[in-house]
Length: 229
Image (cartoon, rainbow, N blue to C red; front, side, top):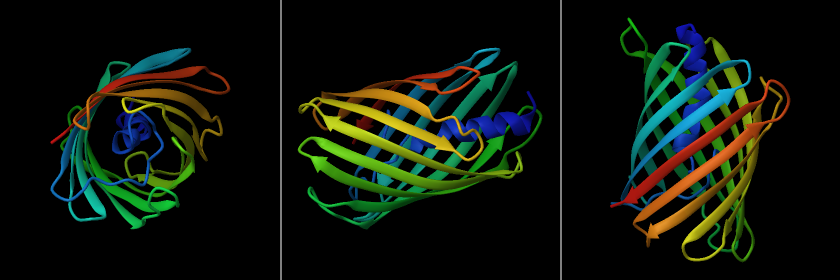
């Protein structure tokens, strides 16, 4: 697998790390000023007739102001005898706060670099993502995204969209269902996720399972945690 191809694959898998895990769809919430979160996940991405891809991710994010957070993400993707490391600096700014009853709007953005075998760190990825979160009913929130990314090494730009429904089942459990795709595959992903607040407002554990419509059949499985401090 050539470096540009693995770079493009890592791009498609890394953006969820900047989102509201375990969902791929970003939400409009931001970390409060002075607060920080450490987030990590492992992912397995098998595809029929092709080598599977594994991803390990570690992210630290902190609130920079009342409406902006910044995050640094380190990831490693490996598959088909090749591996690729990435470093991404991302941010999210809330431009409209609708509170508990109205829509909130945010803009997520970032720049990333990759370090493949035999090469140094190379600037690669830039992205911007428009985000809206809208309370539907008590305990239910709709999240929507429209984004654009560009990989310099893969020489490719991609427009993406995502829709998710998040349900706060109780004080400890959140359930998620989502649909997302881009203008290159035209084969939407369907994904379900669950998040458990193991230590109230301190430690969350999460998992997701998804599959891509069409052929060849592709699947995605992740396990993760988030620690607030």
